[in-house]
Image (cartoon, rainbow, N blue to C red):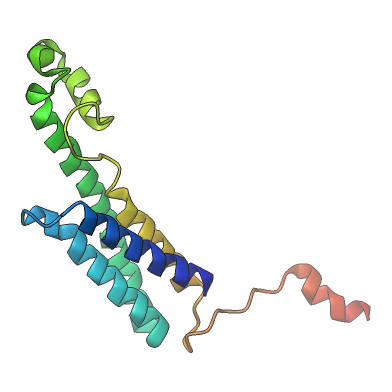
Length: 158
């Protein structure tokens, strides 16, 4: 249940961060909000109705959420790259930098306003929900740990 709580807390924290950043001004900025709604629904479904079809659906959807996070990293990097020529530090010499150098500055967030790795929080949320799905049985309880070989041998020694 701790992983479920951590996933829920991460969803709430991410939504709070997006709200504080007013991350809804363009259609593209609504994508992480949609991802958080989907992740929340998956988490609720996993806890409330953990049937085999629900668990499979949650795992597929969380895989898509990882892809959305990676696409977000690419979008943020491209946005930073496009803003490079307007940057106070690099703007005047942006055109003289090599292509790889410009992309490097965009990736490490030297230029632009988009935090490059922030979208990976969607992949983190997906990973937490996936972990929660691995430890859930069909009745919604945490699955018992598998016995080890020493547990199997213990009754024979008694």
